[in-house]
Length: 438
Image (tube, rainbow, N blue to C red):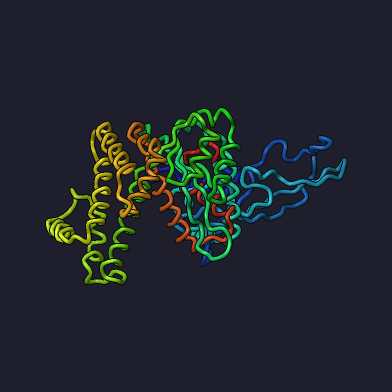
């Protein structure tokens, strides 16, 4: 006796072919795929000539093969029989309209393209895995997915709306000896500041110069540029100059990661210089300065008892006084950034910059250089404490996601292709919820 809570099986609905204007009339299971024979759902105007309006006579059928979304990871192929007509009046020959099922001359159904785009963007599948699941060639899957992603996601002007805080940084997109290896990435940090979501990749530009970033900003609409309030960046003066020229009302913020990195680099240079002066060679495993190289970069509030003892023993040697002074500045900067009270943290950082801007002995060359840089960018460094949510840390996180993308794809040779894949990977898109993805 049939169960009243279940309907008889309908392969057309199960395979979601009713959404494509198709109906299943048969199936064949092959070792590597399932083949569904389909007919186009007839419409009233199919048999009428669009040139003269006369009714056409059937002239047989033609077969169109389409890769469809897999079920249970079994590739599914649609064998679509399309009826042909010939007008007895003007002689015109035409076929049934199959645009609901697929784009003209396409090898993937619209459902297959949608499945592939979701797999690539949301599930982070590789193009090779998508092509295998659809039982098509790599280039067939890649071209179809990128074309659809470009249409509904990348070319969508709405992705630039509501941007008030951006981050800019350089990114290495390939590791080769020839050719330009760098691109400039622009990140939307507005969701981080507003606490509504993660950062997203806004765009990517070839090169890492002032001109590259300035040209990109100049290409945006004036209303968009006027809406940008904050730009987070590293210490590269080219980004600073481009921001000042194209976004005069925006506040430039030098994010903590790069500020602390400047101090950490000064500490390393000082340690290596003292190592050479006292030992006459580069650091070796038994040298105290070399053994403490990682401990010196650890915040004092995170040091273990053993690490604290190592630091104290290191600074009992008079020849290590320069390292101790540089380490003290490094630790003061970390303390300023970690302070819970932003106003107090700002005061601590301002004190560090003020102390480095004057009265530093000439023998502490690393601190002199650091002080010169921080004094020049003091306003940008201190702006971080006045504007919460403006760290470039999420930019570094997105760079990490792009590194994973490049590793999964075993590298990229085409920059245009890499930019498109990066925007799909880290652009914050959710195509399964996007109203334009059919």
